[in-house]
Length: 258
Length: 303
Image (cartoon, rainbow over the protein chains, first blue to last red):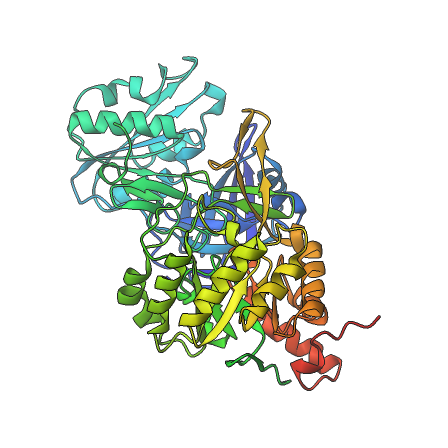
């Protein structure tokens, strides 16, 4: 669908744990063909502290309800405000933005890796990949057991593996310490979203294993549709906008020293 | 509908609303949102003679009621523009203006000569006020002698409408405006961004890779408005007002201060439809105040 600016109505705000919320937003414009990995840019309010919009990965699309959900982790005044919203409140949103992941083919074995709030684009990705007939494996990393959310929901679409920094759940350490990533498990593709050091470590691993890998970047941006040129990342083809050329990039196109 | 049309030298605008360079891409990025031909003019992303990669990331910091940018004129150069972008933007039924940049006077001249060949580009905006490049840019706009020189030399090779975009990072902006007017500028646009800085207290580091950057948004509006008022009283050529315009009321304030037209910048990032909303808002205001022509509003400040 074309990019659009529209007021969406909150139909549900679910508190997932101490700092994560799932906001479900209903559109009156018909949603169609949204690709996992695309994002929305939300106007929080016109307060001086939240002057620019806040970008969020599309967590899930519900075509039946014509709604989009986004995962909000409270990190500052913008996300704080969003977490406090109630059903029937509205938000002005630009959507859908950016390019999504390259979808797997049937019978392909894929690994989705999400770290922290980077799990956000992986729910729709898991769901759609499963529908396409791919064999989905999902590796989720967080600091502690308390920080892990939505594990049950993810397990509806694939096999879930966990790591935690303190070992309180799953394998102790980073996602790259998990055995599922340590040896070649016959994955055809790896898709990753999370903190940049994590994505670089996963990209390095994918390269060693010779597995195709895409990452979803989250650079600071002012517009979200390719005109401010603030969110650039270095690629083999020069500086590219994360918002319009990404946010999903094949690791071979990035100038990462891996 | 009130008559919103206005001329800036030979440039005929259907309304006084333009989009500021560097906030509107090549216009095509807005095609999904609205028909950009409704605008008075569009100012394309700052263009240079050769490809520029711009500055390192991070290039942006959100600040109270505004933002800092340090893009550094990232663009693919004029030859790429002529081959790939010009054919598309020529289709627009509005004035398409190129924002011209150089690090030397010779570069400004060479670039202007190339732009002069383009039939569908009726004007240039000579950017002597970019704060984010190491060479040239703001250095030309903050020194009377250099501003005079680059305007004079570009004037020699360019017959169409020449707008000079001024830097606010000077003691007396009216002095610079008078200087470029005397050297043949047909109009002045102001202001470009204010040099600013952001520090992350947690990391104890600057937020921008370039340490300093250009401040824009409503945070600068009162200063920009004051500068437009001062310049409009100092020169005879039409003034184009820029600086933190977020809505029709802001735009009207600039016109009352003496601007013949306005440019919408940072507001495009937040609401891509804002420039059309502003055109409609100006029309509503004029109808409400029973003003027939935008000329009745320009410099209409009552004291």
